[in-house]
Length: 324
Image (cartoon, rainbow, N blue to C red):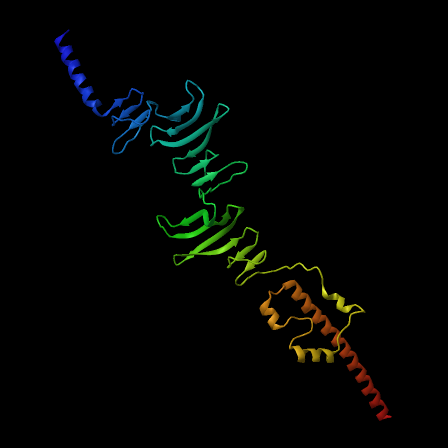
């Protein structure tokens, strides 16, 4: 063998041996790079291990798939799933690239999730318009808790809003639940906001459908602990007090009303102050009772007007007789 060739091969062998001191192919077929004890088919070990897939495309202008990682069944040409880069570059500008995650159904590979070069993430859509954009016929997000306790009461999970890199929540939407091993779980949906760094529940939808604003324990379909300011409020009424004007309505005399007031310190058919304090007021019912009292008062005024007119006629008759 030529002496020069021998020396070259000898030096090449030494270099390979030195290079492979931390690399190893196990008898199992596992390949280690940076480790002699690979735990997987390909095991990389370094301070900051990276895998780079560099395309050899030399075109000045290029749009399309740049490369990726394909997953498939053994010896199957059809992909089961795929992670790849989709890029677009021009000779006079920096390249941009999207990262795409695809899965196959019935051997048809379809893009499922994309991370755009601007950071927007699309699920079910390849051109997301927001930081997270979901698109489907019925898009849903499920937050599933891994709590396995047979009995549990507390916060189940939610969505937290905060300032950038701030651990303090600015607002929060979360589920508050309670379950036991022998019953179905129930859950409330709670909306909370923070004032001066203190997060407080503001709005709650209970598991029974009751809604509370300013209270976490609503007693009716809508319970508000505070002031309601509205331009218009409509209350459905099943009855109106026009029956006061029916011929068979028994209108109390003013003497009877006076006696009742002196004894009870409130109007007939109107709850007392103690009853108002002990019980919630029904707006529709109360409006109807007030209408009843207004209509009764109208009847009293009509009756008084008749008496006044009668007295006026009698006075006029007396004056006529006196002048004659």
